[in-house]
Image (cartoon, rainbow, N blue to C red):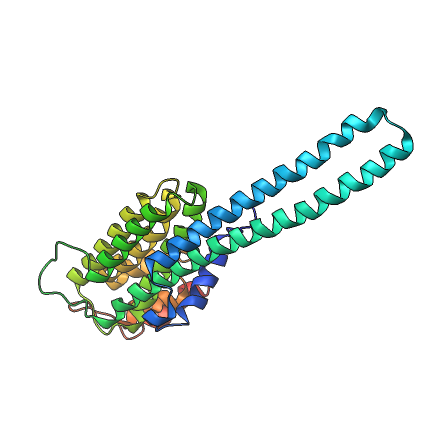
Length: 283
């Protein structure tokens, strides 16, 4: 998509870290209003149409110059100067319209990322020590996935699939990063709590996969990482140690240590656990 840089996974993580540093995000920090977001999508569409129209107008000025090739050198020279000057100014105008259209789409992407954080920060406001297995995802996930489906449908008439992929494509990386960072803020979590967080990530993955043209494989990869991370809490320490030795680069040292620090009822962690994990990671 011209004018938009997708970037690699490292850039995504750095950006989501910056956005997460803005927490807590309040509703008044967001556009939030669906109608305003639809207007932005419509404005982007109108600006793209204007850019195309201006470019076609510029092309109509260029074509007469080919007809004048058989005329006198003086007349041809004068016509060339005139016809080349107009398309140049029109091309500049078309580029400006297209830049503004791209800015609208960037704002929509950023809004969806901030909306994701706004919902995901509720994860740190509840306890994940469950006494019964829930059937549904958490309310904040249901709210977020409903919002994603609604906004995708409402923007569809104005934004092509490739751009909707861009608008909603930043959600999974932000949600995954927020989910993993949330563990460091938890005091306790049990097996049913782990299952609930995995249920949340599956629901979000399904909502994003329903968007046409979205990179479902990338979404699955990012949210699979969340499930793998939390499922490590179910392992005995020696098994966790073996996982770190084999897969040390999947998570950072800080993330591995947060797995040790949270209280998991029934799990035994030796006194030298942090030293042994750090020793493996330092090799």
